[in-house]
Image (cartoon, rainbow, N blue to C red; front, side, top):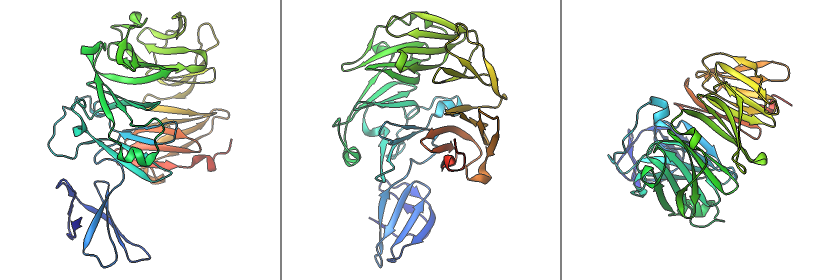
Length: 366
């Protein structure tokens, strides 16, 4: 419990929480929002405030991952934002680096760097949930968080004290910097700064693989076509397809893409704009669909493409070429967009000022 201070509050660790809004409900209960994500409430004539740990972690959030159960995991990729490595320092007890949100039940949980000595960094580059594991790619290796119960519900996640494990170069990783994580069946693949490793989850070890040809070259992106058991890589040498069953490599194109996405048999490539090619071609011939050198990233949704133009977003209908633009005046929080993602009928924008959601399908019928 916290006593009311009319200028500033302090959380359970003594950290300052500045009020940003006050709301009185129909029962005369007071609700106070703060800049740290905490909500304080006072019941009617009470002179004490109850603290509710709700919302994303304090500071900048630059990425989100939505798992198969439609739970959100928010994080910050500090290195991707600043090109600097953030050393972990325990200046205070509140060192949140990962936030879980079950939107349907309204349940939040923050994970702190001081939960385990295995957590060497709060800088998260990628995250996936597979089975009852959460895998987190950092600048100091690959973290595995084992949830207590494979079939646990949101309430048990809220109270869970799972097990943290870390593997790094001392365990066989090609590099500690993990940029992306993919899985195919029960195989986990991680893209490091020095190649691709395959990971076994139980036991948690690095296993030998056949990706030696891709050591010591820059790999910009990788994605997996699960139905074909194929991995597609974008490197400084161009685009290559690898059959994960036979290990046969197929050269696709000399084009270098900083981001690739695949929908059906179409491969979308970000280089000096966004282009599209057909994977069924022996050598892919690309056609430009969006031109521009200020595109940070993009996401594909059926015959639409959402394009991150840093300070605004573009939605383009790939069937007729029509485009719409959205910025801060339309409800996007902030003018520096880090990520655009699509889920069902909604699109989300993550910027330096927060997370925005837009039910765009309501206004753009198929």
